[in-house]
Image (cartoon, rainbow, N blue to C red; front, side):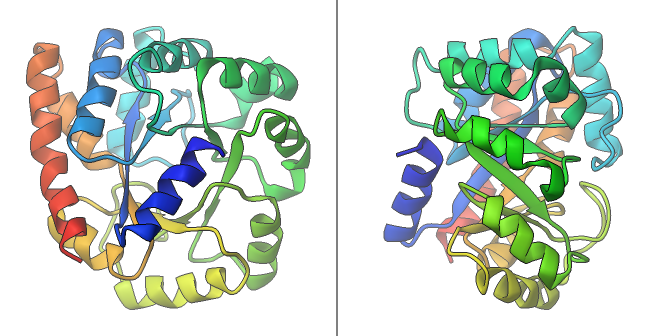
Length: 269
């Protein structure tokens, strides 16, 4: 079984809410990402979502956009992200890793090559922000050959018909975007999130995780109460950026300080 499915099945059987931690590969420095991944796992993350830097990350708010800019300036790429996952796998064979990025680098590499190299590196899922379901079937075919999950976003504005199309292709989990906007924006309307999750669950048995706007123990606890788990990104990227130029140890300590209360909040549900 794919590591994502194993982990989320374990979370469900334990009555535990899943915590997905997002950071940008190569931000604020290339050498920071690997120890940061291990720190996030040690601090309670169930799944690592590794942002693949892109020049036009349209779904991201200013915090993560700047993270992408810093990472690109550091030379990070889709290829180096997979090499990093391969390094991570030398000491961690259990934690699922999802690469989250945009279609251009994937198209340039080619679906078949991407799937082969991602599998060899130990990647468990691919989330392509700007690849619509109408164009995702070929990628899904290649990923399935290597048991890699194709993960999709669903937004508050996604229609019922489109949810049906997306969930037919989706694997691993469904990533529900809690806000009408970019990452890190606004306040979450929990009642609206709960209502939409009900619609999504009418179409799929996959776990539904919620991201965008989860920034602390309170928001994690509130959203975790109505979902299968949460995705935390901007607050982690912001914490790392605030210590750019500092030692990796200091950055990792700060990551722990940010994510441990979020883990605690989820565990109290």
